Image (tube, rainbow, N blue to C red):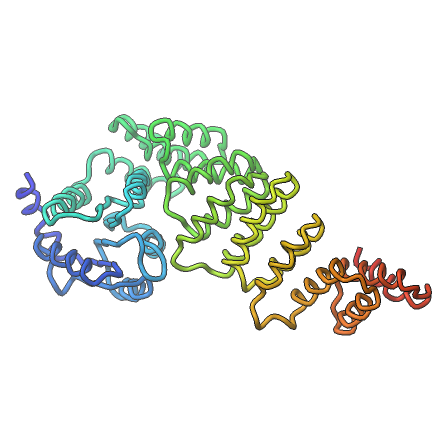
Length: 423
């Protein structure tokens, strides 16, 4: 059977461009040799190690088969697949294959059905990879009646003929024992008709068949977010985060929702996902820093200082360029009379930020709790003021010290007015 299928695929492989993406040169060469042995032409096989190089290839070549490792330089295999789908959304012949050593990731990648046609688990043998590729490519070149019927429905849906599309998708549903994909597209068509309840019902039915069907999960998430059912949306998106490889955009959404729904107990898990990303954009660092700070503050309120400090440590380790977080951590620790801990975080400011407002404010507020010389506190507070630094807590501290020293009301009045303006 394998030999017969290989012969059937020969005309396809001889004319189809292949893109192999793996940061390991030896792995790339092994995949290249496998494709060549199966019948691909050497001049039609492109082999690169990074997302940027892959993007340059797909700008000029019409790629038909992609074999990508999950971890690639500059992103992930899923980032590459998304890029290819967006570049040519009508190309239903594009075959996307994920290569990974993480079994949990590969198992759920299969559940995404359309986004990934197959997966290859490392380490693999020459025989196992050939069998996998022949099976995958045969199914792609000679699709089942179920897949062909779903594709027929998608054409109708994309043309705005939603009722006709739903009829076709229902026909497809009868052709497969686990028709999550057909149920997703029924839901999608209903959603486009603005039949939200019917769309939700269809997505839920798809998840009854496959509880981690990626498209049905995303469909539900979009509905819940649109209807501001934030707790429901969080339950869905946290499941996506648990079972599917991290996507930076999705991770930002998850962190926002975790904060909005007060699911602070999950923030450490999202931080650990964040640390697995090869590249961490500043926007995402800002989100994770804010999320970890807010969750840490929540744990302080719940009298769990050890957990709070763990979250704060994560912030200063991974988001050091955002000194506003270190300052906020120090201020909240002072608020909870944890001055020793606050002082430790003062040393975590980058060395080149010692003249920045965040550091100076933090240093002043710690000193105000350490030093009993109110004249010194007034002097340092006035130094900050003369440097145009305006902070409510600093002004409150300065005014309290001025009152202790015995400053007259008329001398205090300008600072008091500025403090009241900040309230």
